[in-house]
Length: 326
Ligand code: PEP
Ligand code: MG
Image (cartoon, rainbow, N blue to C red):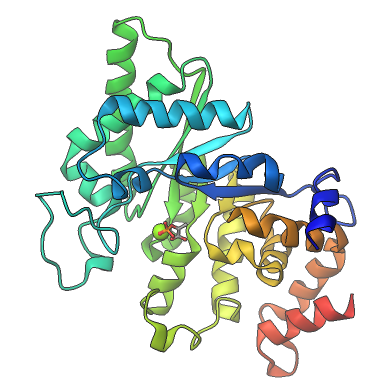
């Protein structure tokens, strides 16, 4: 299998009928970087910057942050990298963060963009490090756990201020800056067009989006197999997101665990996703599926089944049958 995957690296990342789908990888630490070439990823679709904070015993200094981001961009050799601003709080606690509070429902609590907008010093330091590390290159930045569009506007103000600050001191700035939002909170589903217009790209965090749409704790093993990510309601949600992206000419990607399983990746591509980001080990198996996929037939399958699954069968069973038949 490994040999097959290695051979596949040289092949274009397209469906059997020639539609391109970018397969990107998720990363978070310098040790992940060699995987970029080994797995044959088209870039890094999600760089989890909080990992550097989680393995440290105090807040990483601005210089250490900048160095990591620079190393990541060097290792990427011009392939796109999307940095996510720190996603701490919830299940990701920093023992040294004195401001942390006790919460009854940490997943619904003071975390990610909520926390960093309240502690803008953290965000400012990180953004400055990212801007400096991206001098002369494109910077792609995304915000975790966005709930309202006002949060994007607030973050943008902080970013703009840092850009002005650095240009005043004649720093080498990024050639362009793309700001994206993660779609993880269901409130955004009811303002998809506004969301798409407010950002340069959207990335679906399907781990959290599934958790919040189904009201199921993503870490609860008792419930882990109870609800299906490939159930019709969740697939319809994903279709609406993909459609809104197309309608507004806003690139949409997905970077949760869903992207890494061939059957789920197949479903995502059928629903309209043309870029997905996964753990490096998944790229080979997903590419093997991709190159065999008759996308025109899968689209017809969804036209027939998404709103009314054949014989009332679960979508997973229908998708599995579709894959087995081919
Ligand atoms: C997600 O929620 O799907 C995601 C990619 O972010 P994380 O798993 O880091 O919460
Ligand atoms: Mg998440």
